[in-house]
Image: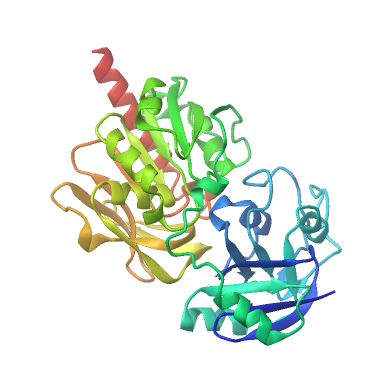
Length: 381
């Protein structure tokens, strides 16, 4: 089965399909991770995007149902250099191709992904289409130019949960939590409301491992509804799309500031910046991979981080009398984290739960617990 990939700059690639059939549009981006393709496929932050893997050999360990980040693949399409149908892994349940076909995801192999990646790095992420039904290149290019841009798109509303739910699955696979956390027993439980803008399941597992009892609520859950749940802390999740388009989330976060400890990751980080009066902008080709170096400006330590985002916080627009820059990206000096100087509020752009370091960034969950413990103690006394 042939598949064509057409880009808005007029470039057309022809390859072989190993997923579903049909036609799909999306923003074409690349991820530099060597492993973790099923986590990438199921990360809701990739909604609306056609993902290119720069590592050339994909599919050789198949798919298992334990390592997914959501209930189904979230990408619009998938691009690889060479696909392996004959997988080898004792945990695997199926091949990657079978999984994509079952979930109606179009995938293409056999194209020059190095050329495609260099094109994206030079010209920026761009709109594209994967098609198994259109054979005329010019018609595909014309369709792409009429498709939606990522700018101004609220995709959080498309991937968020429909109703609130509780989460109690503990992360037992990465490493055990120490008996004492910063000198305090980890047997204490903290009620945390997770606002789901496209949350990854491993974030929920990690929070639960730290003793948090989680209530996950939809992205449009109001501040008043959240405060009625009487949480000890509020977590702002990752998610896809343009943060500036998620107006209702920004408004609700504004109302939550100063009420409870807040911890944000990825889109949650960007939304928090907007709620605090800052602005965001679209990166040329985004940060997507598992080896991004980030400097902690407080400790001067460097963390190896996992990232997936196409927008960033414009630090020039932040009020430095109230907000402190805590982390920067060592590749391009973009904002990777900040905290409030007076309130128990902090956030990062990267994914500490993904553990590429593998433990470099896990202290952030401990910091959230510390903030909640302090708040609970002050209320009780």
